Length: 233
Image (tube, rainbow, N blue to C red; front, side):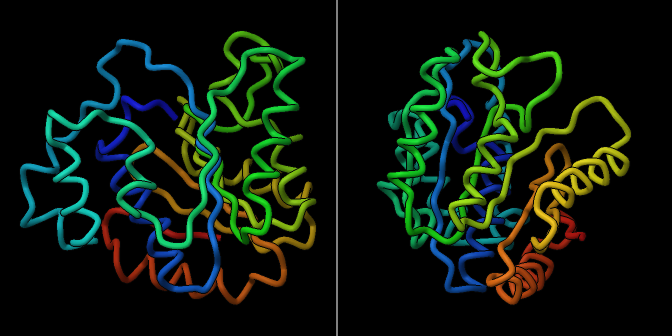
């Protein structure tokens, strides 16, 4: 996640998804931003949705209003706004910048999990998604990814997990199936699901004790975000 992305259309759907899950359940949320530095590109500028409230506000009017106010040019775009404006109820955050260093990365995760301990659902928000073979752990481009070892550790510590994953240039249905299969092999007892938007899929592995909450969450997302967030298992 980069501060420059805050409040764009992808953020609206992302916060909307997490809010729907929280509203449908009693789960608490831990957000690990996996924050990286702004890169000076135009990524994150897609905020035209804020100019058409008649259409977009119907999905989550409270969230839409908050993001509209935060879209004021005098307000810096930053993930800290999510906390200051309480965009996500029952949420805790870890907002340190991800190190591109093999020696420092384990410490980053340990600090994140320590700060977010006690939360039921842990959301990883990397720039790109889950690790790829071409980018090794702890190398220069690694901050853009969350690594399987980190997802496993979070699940081992009794968190259910949900992971932001930008679609690569591959057939999307096939890509989702592959990632769900990888999650199934890692977490045989987990309750798995996915939430798909235009350019992103959110991959979910819930602890068995949270299986009922996942069913309720799926129903709420389907009801609140028709045509914007598709739900599958």
